[in-house]
Image (cartoon, rainbow, N blue to C red; front, side, top):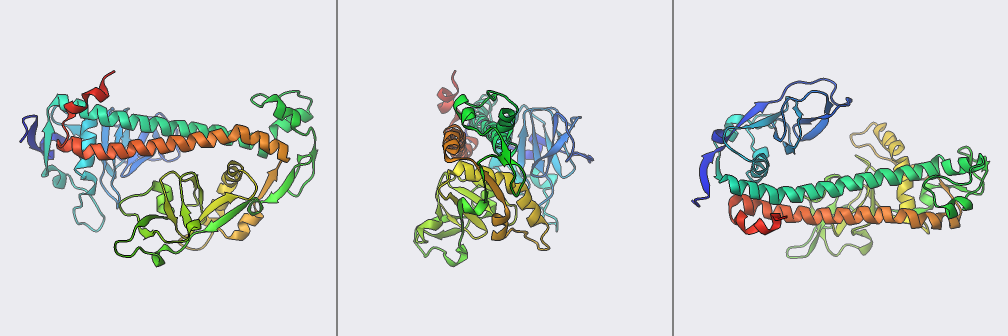
Length: 404
């Protein structure tokens, strides 16, 4: 064995501590994140362990490995890790991922990970200096990914707040009708173009001259194909099949494949807007490369309307769509096309919509760019992780990446 590593077992290196029962964490507010078997599940005001720390799922079909820089709480479906030797906690987190400790199964009817099954497994532990370097290389990548996604969450909140204020609540028009000569955050040229009064409509008062339209009149909703009928032939190029699971969690090793020869209109690409009309009812801009659009998903394109405008209205109606789906007496609730026709949108004049597009499109473009960069960094991290943890690539070779 390389002299930088020592042979050991997980039982000699760590102790897996049981989480504790906790009530009310799902609806609670507090500074302390609560972790369960596959990630954060709520908040509380009292920590069970100090950070940095690692949480390993104990029960359930999917048992994740999660890292917390700060104090945290763990419920009784998971373990938290206490090191027995001098270990860098972030290196330990990546080592546990590499050794797939979340996939160990004791064979019981309820999938579970036991301490005994983990402790007997072998692990090679590098010297502390190498642990630190590996943790910094992989940790810097994860920190950048988290920063990009945190930025996207902020951009999404800002853009949707603006849209609701201007197009749903009509706050600038109300201000103008009340005698205001400007509106905070709105360009003066756009404010000047707004009407200063309201008129009645089928959904209540709307700005004078604006129109009420069904959601499906401003966009086309293309339903996907039953991709099990379009499996690739032996040796044929293929595309990942984008189902609801992929829309929710991204492409994985379990993602199905479809023939590359499917009709082009069913191939989705980065920047396409996808909306699942059954199951989870999610709506998002796709950023994981070309894929095959499965049934139960719509590819949404604007019908003479900018996609940011269409997407924003889908997000406005999404909660109502989810409520409709949840009311269905089936295992997989859904909406129908008639619900797209029943969902009304308010459309301003073409001049105002054009001015708004100049403001809103950059929000969407930046979010897509950030997410694409996050995917690139995730791919790099996933490539480096097994090579660094196993010693195939020596950590000192990457010291230049950590300088400065």
